[in-house]
Image (cartoon, rainbow, N blue to C red; front, side, top):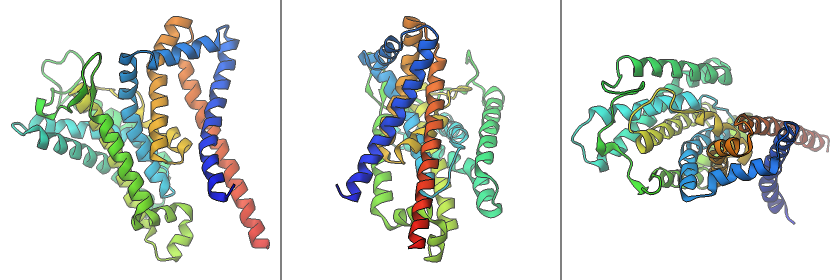
Length: 353
């Protein structure tokens, strides 16, 4: 088996092993609590995939998670880690709602792209400050991302409750967007599924094409692989890091826009249960592979949808899903550390030789 095939096998098997270990750890916890883990996971996945309605719900949950995964993966290709996707997603949703509400009389073929583009611009704009502080001042990007997530949540709550509050809304939300801004549905019964899933596949293809088939994508990956070597070879590292973070923010904004225009048609306070955070372990687990990100998003969507049935049928708390996700993060971090140390040991051997 040549080196390329070995790497491909490792890229496929490593995530599967990590997922199995996370579920194994969760099984031990479920068993120690006096429940049957086999029954728990059976009802978990039956609740997510057992009926057409539950499958549609799972796909709906997976759509924003996939966009968040793309956003994290793109920044990771440049060797940086955008943990502020949740805030960018929230601001992108708000940015999509504004033209949906205030631009009237537009045909859907114009109104929908304008709303989604507005959401992407809002997401990129919200990523601008931490990006500039990182590339100009060397500020810790992870700390900035966490802070900006909290700020976004509070600012959007103020805007929804205050200046942009809906007049007849029974809960905290904006006005309804114009019907021309609704994403069309490809399925309406038993549940609704918008063209958001088609946009996911389109973005996945474009992202794969950009990273693997363009010179800009190659230079972006060079920055991520070895920033110092890329700088010595004439690649504009600062430009690529800035572009990667802003494009990552735009994808986060697209996630919020598609979620709002495809499902809610108005901006609700705290509409996101943490989709931006779900994208982080998925991007790390799949190495940023777009198809892997979609598969990981379906898994996380299934965990969210099936958790309630698992709790009602078996009695296992839905908090076990948080345990599984947290275990995945820990295992991914351990795997990354091991890979880094092996890589460094290999470089030392080459230097001695």
